[in-house]
Every structure is written in structure tokens, then in C-alpha cells.
Amino acid sequence: MDELKQPYSKIGRIQVTRKVYFTDYAMPPQLQEWATSALREEAGKLNADAVILPEVTSRQIDIVVFPSFPATEYRATGVAIKFSK
Image (cartoon, rainbow, N blue to C red):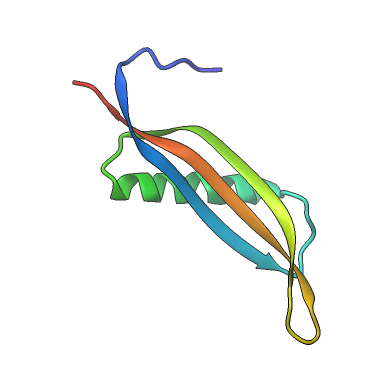
């Protein structure tokens, strides 16, 4: 695991959510790419230098309309930081 040797301050916690319909509960490799890209984009909006402690989770949900159908909600979280000068 890499260690940050440069001082930084936390800007805030970032969370992005994505719902995928008619798929299984597994996390395919492209999901990690989506999470990294989405977290970096949100961090950029905050003028952050980086995102640390990224985490991707998923949960199965049911969309209730007639007929109901399965969906998966993916959630990526991380902490936006700004390096100290």
C-alpha cells in the first residue's frame, strides 16, 4: 500500500451512485474504472488534488413497478484531499 508522505488537508467525503438494471450482483472489472473516474471527476469539482481511501460497494435492489425487476446499485466513496504547500 502506498503511503502519502506529503502533508494534506481533507476537503470532504465524496459519494457517487450508479444503478444498473437487469444485471447480477457481481462487480465486474470495468466497475472499478467507473468508480475511479467518477470519484476523480467529483474531486475536480471541489478543486481537490487527489482522492484517498476509495471504496466500491454494491447492493441488490428491486424496482417496484408491474412487473418488478432486479437492479443493482453501485456506490463509490472516497475522501477528497488538497496537498499543503
